[in-house]
Length: 119
Image 1 (cartoon, one colour):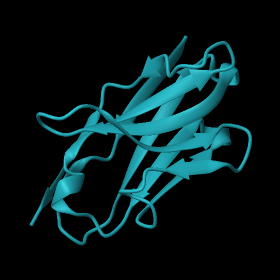
Image 2 (cartoon, helix red, strand yellow; image 1 turned 90 degrees about the vertical axis):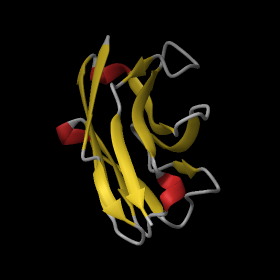
Image 3 (cartoon, rainbow, N blue to C red; image 1 turned 30 degrees about the horizontal axis):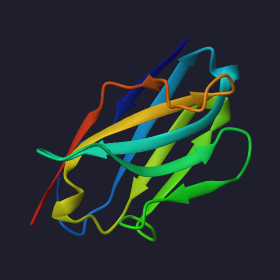
C-alpha cells in the first residue's frame, strides 16, 4: 500500500503562484509514476501532470503546460506541483495519485487539497 498526503492549497488571486506538495509513505519503492489530477465543482476529475518516479519524464495537460511544473524529491518521497500564472479556471480540488509497477491504473490517491483562484 502507498499512502499519499497533499498539502499547500489555499486561496490566491489570479496571476499568483502556489506550490502543492504530495508526501508518499508506505511501499514507496513500488511507485512507478506520480500524478496530479484536479476536480472542479460540477466537473469530472481531470489529469493535470505526471512524472516518472525514477526518470526525468514529465507530461502535462494542455491547459496547464507552460504554467505548471511537476517535480519530485525521491529522498523525501515527495512530489510537487509548482503552479504559476494561476487563473480562476484552475480552481479545483487537487489530488495526488500513484501508480505502481503492478498496475496500469492510479490505484492510490490522496485526500485532496483545495485551490481557489479569485479574479
